[in-house]
Image 1: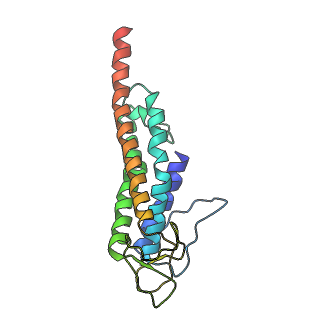
Image 2: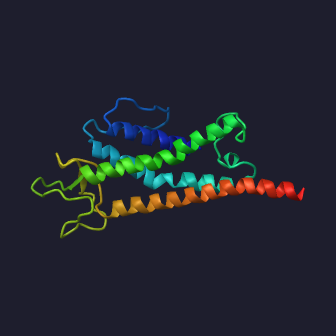
Image 3: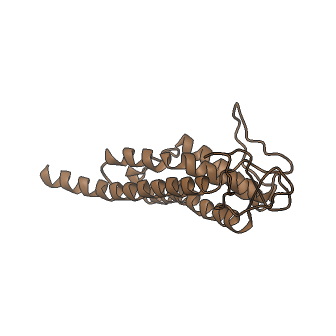
Length: 205
């Protein structure tokens, strides 16, 4: 859950940055993310989508592993235990539902938000100012390799932005998001089975 909270904080800050909001969540860590002062809305969206795609799938995976060994209520199977509240109680159900929405559902909503920004506003540019910018799926006739770091994702106003690989990055992001969604389905299945395991145990006692 520590990893889930850190990912949530990072995604929240990237989401706020795309809205040009000064509000951000701060956590004292040995390291911190500091974007350049001239980073664009598209750049923040790219960093947020990368974080979700590369790391978020581990959260529903670990929650699913935890839920497989639990029995009782569905909320008891969800591994959020930062508050000293019985998960099966009325207050516990509310807390667990809120935790699920913030730590599991919210990243998918943010991923959709980031993807829409990139799809509609982003341009893939080369350092050469005379080279026209392309779309996020486009590759030039003579690419410099499978992963060419000379590509830059911008809003089209300049050729300066985060490095980006057309075709490869969008496909990788969508594939990893699909993996994360698959683990969420498995998690929900195990949360449902947890309450069934309690019924079975009581019938045999």
